[in-house]
Length: 171
Image (cartoon, rainbow, N blue to C red):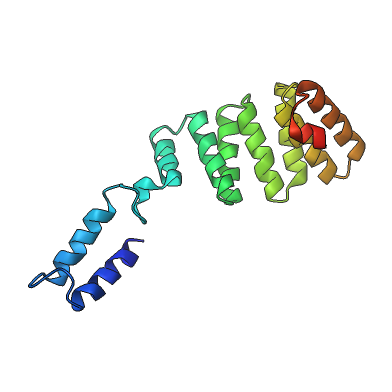
């Protein structure tokens, strides 16, 4: 991104940008400094939420919450393989983390690994049997695995756990 910001500055200087006698080098430095001020400017890596989460995980590599948050951000960005890696790491750090297991199940589902996703979702349900989120995801994966009767049972359990949950009502 920085190179993209520098090239227009050089072209602008050649057209007279920067006033009289301002060398190209000065114009480039001004653009570079402005781009690193983290004022939400395009190309500023510090303003990027994904970059902030990556930095947090580097600072706190054993923080399950930070690793799961990074996995969530990767998943939201459609970077499912990266999400899978982070959720796997979170599940290794805290095998009893329902959030890590749910993330791992969703990442597997997004990658087309239905069996592995179902295993992770089932483990999450075992940890939190009344979690509508875990039950709904398990039901989705059961449907994808060609087990509609088991999926219906999971949706019924989810509906009992959270009667107002939209996903359980639809399921």
